[in-house]
Every structure is written in C-alpha cells, then in structure tokens.
Image (cartoon, rainbow over all chains, first blue to last red; front, top):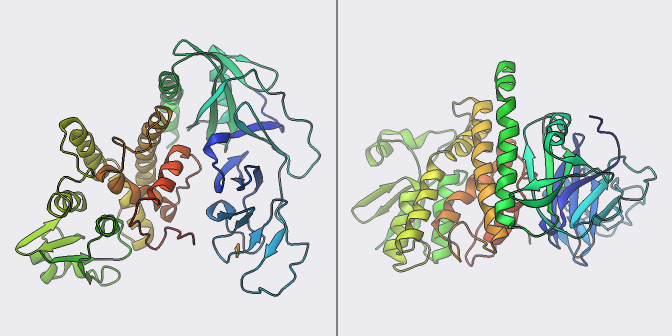
Length: 219
Length: 209
Ligand code: FES
C-alpha cells in the first residue's frame, strides 16, 4: 500500500466549530486546524514562529488565532499582526506561520500534505453524505489501509467504500504517525448513524486485536 | 454547616471538588496543604485525619470525608438537594455512579500518570499512559455516540457529577504528554464544560479571556 503526498482528510468539518482550534498530525507532522468566526477553516503548521509553541493550544479571537504562550496573534493568512509585549511595533512581514492548502468537501476538512508547494486541486466532493466521526487506530497507516482493502474498495478520491451496520459508508484514511492512523467516516446513504459509528468502533478494535500479539512481542 | 477543604492547588482531585463548590456557589474555607515538596498530607497530623494520606479532605462539622467522588456526592445531597447533578431517578443515578467509579477506576491511570510526570510520584509512565489512553477512548466513543444522538453530556440532558469527575483527568492530560488531537468529541464536551455557570480553571487549564 502506497501512501504518498496528496490530499488527506484530517477532521470532520463540524468537529472544528467556529472560533476553535485543534491539533492533528499528518505523516507525523504537527498541524493546527482552526476555524475563524466567519466560518472559514485553516490548516497550518502547528508551530508558533516565536518559540515553537503549538498554536492548537491557543485560542481564536475573531479572525485571528493567538498563541497561548505570549499571545502573538496571526491573521487568516498566517501573518503575525500583533505582539502584546510590543503593542506599538509594526510586526515584520517575515513573522508568518507556514500554511497548508486545505479545502472542505463531503463534510470533511482536507489538506494537501506537502507544505507550501503548489497543490493539485482537491478531490471532487463525493456524492452527498453525512460526515459522522473520526476514529484513531493504534496501527501503522499502511497496515490499516491493507486491512480496509479486505472488505472495502479503494476509490479514486483516496477513500474506501464499503458497508457498516448495513449502511453504505466512505472511510477516509489519515496517515497520522508511523504507528497511528486516523479514519474519517462518512455515511453515504440511509442508515442509523449511531449503529454505523458503533460498527466502526468494532472494526477498529478488530484491526487492533488482530495485530496485538505482534505489538506485545515487540515490547 | 461550615465546610473546610484541605486542598492542594495542583492536585486534579482537589480541583474536581473546588470546581463543584464553585458551580454550587459555595465558599468553603480552604487550607493549603504542602504536598510538593513537603508531603504534608502524609504527616502524622494529616494521617490522623485521613489514614490514606491523600487529598482532598472535606471536613463538615464532625464529618470527615475523603475521596473526591464521595465528596461530590455528599455536596450534591447536603448543599444542593434535588439538584440534577446527582439525579434521584434510578437509571440516571446508576449511570452517574458508573461514571464516578470509572473515574476512580480505569481513568485513575490518567491521574497517576500526571502525578508521575509532574510530582515524581512512583509509577511506570508507559503503562499508565497506555491505560489512560484506553480510558480516554472509552469516553470519546461514548461522547461520539451521545453527539450523534443529539445529546451533549455524559448522562441525561444537563451536566451531572459524571461530567465534573471525568473532566480534570482529560483536560489536564497534556501535563503528562497526551494531546487532545484524537478526541474531537471530548474537545467539544470540554468546551461545553466551560459554559457551566461557576466554572473555574486551575493551573494547566487555559483561561481564555
Ligand atoms: S511561543 Fe507563541 S507567542 Fe511566544
């Protein structure tokens, strides 16, 4: 299974409410996902240019995100606009957070994994569905991808189509770290969302259980 | 009844009690105990009060209570009779109690992991972290299911002692190296906790002004 640079889902769009931020990882790189009060989502490198604090620990004020440590505030382009300790300073243009290309489709927040570079257009939105939830599996992304392919079909947009609790679903895989994988679940037709969610938990648990002896042997 | 809380500011269990007192709008006399580095909670005077050598301790007249969840239950009955924080109805009461035992049982690994990381308490950090993540996952799955069902709190339609008891270990988890990245449902619920009138923070819980 070849997980390469490209577009990946990193969150359910509704889970990042306006005025909030969250951290996540893609190929072990730390990302902050945040949504301004106008409702626009942003995905950046999760590192404050001042001293490297994770910006996801910070807080959103209007259309800025402010760092928890010393309050440096960044606008929606990642440009630092205010340094509380030096209120009269004209902030140099060079103080800027590295930003990722991101988009929202199918109720998910999608990110292109290569920082800064020109990105190809994001995958076309899947047919309407309801983005349900995220799950995190304590297994390597390629292992999870291989397990998914036993019961699911890989689609062109990078998702996996299958059935959970009798309902059609799409699963978007997020290479989180070398040993952890995010799964973002979209209900692609009629179905009981709670039952589908529970079936996804059972699938996650089965993936992990089948690999548990290997994990214990490695300890 | 005058209430005296023997308290340590950085202790998550003491915070649990302070949080509920604040939500109830009750002021208790607070006595600061020198846990670190003094280990005063294990001094002869404190062992006479609580042989387990732990905090918090609540003294209400002749009554001496230990164990944070028990103190929450006592306060709900004594200071807020009929309050929805400890429901009377059997099913809701049972559900709240099972989360309180979960908080002291599986989730206790999170509290222990934090003490090991911050106050050099004994314990194997890797084992505790694995157990804490397993407990957080149980909470995350529960709150995901609740969210998909249109509910916002661990039990019932409003905050209960379950929410109060489960909140400190997860909100403070960065103190022992577990981020909130994998817990979107718990992030949503933790934000909601901040809207409870009387909500207070402690060191390690950001206070957004
Ligand atoms: S580290 Fe972000 S403002 Fe100082």
